[in-house]
Amino acid sequence: MKGIIIVFTLTLLFSVAAFGQTAANPEADKKAALGVVTQLFTEMAAANPPGILALGTPENQLVAIRKMRDGKTKVEVISGDAFSKMFTNKEVLLREEMYAPQVEVEGDYAMVYGRYVFFVGDKLSHCGVNQFNLVRVDGTWKIANGASTIDPTACNEKEKAMKPDPAKWPAAKAQ
Image (cartoon, rainbow, N blue to C red; front, side, top):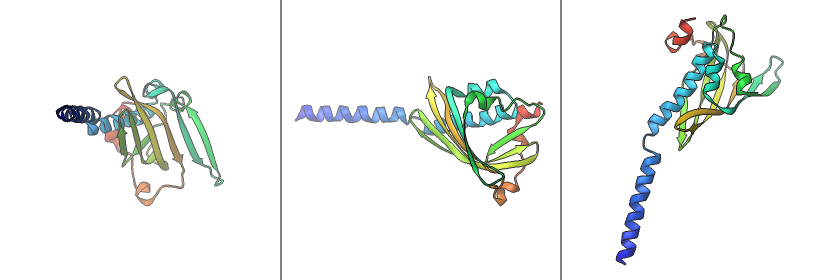
């Protein structure tokens, strides 16, 4: 009986220690995962394709669910490389802001999602929902894939009243 109690106690101690390691600092993981998505928006605004690519896994992709002017929906699967090349024009400032992001973390997986607004210059272009899946690779969060709705008619009243926040765009200020 003593042996069973010792084995049970050791198992319990190792289980608690192992749980503590996987959930050591969930808030830091959430902050780091959100930081990658925020950096993506900064790199997009800076028209920096290499910076965009560096934030993702080699095989990352985006699914864009685009509402067309004729009311139809177009679904596009865009590779990370093709996506990064959409942001090369330094003449036009493109800014995306996810204003109330939610972050979930489970071990080496994180999901960042929420509504966003997209500005061309200081003009609101469209709104929608972003969702990014991130994986921790060698201790660093990387974007594995994402999905976005893109709809110029989907902005709610709160979003229509929003203006780009210059404090969020240090890289864009230098242009």
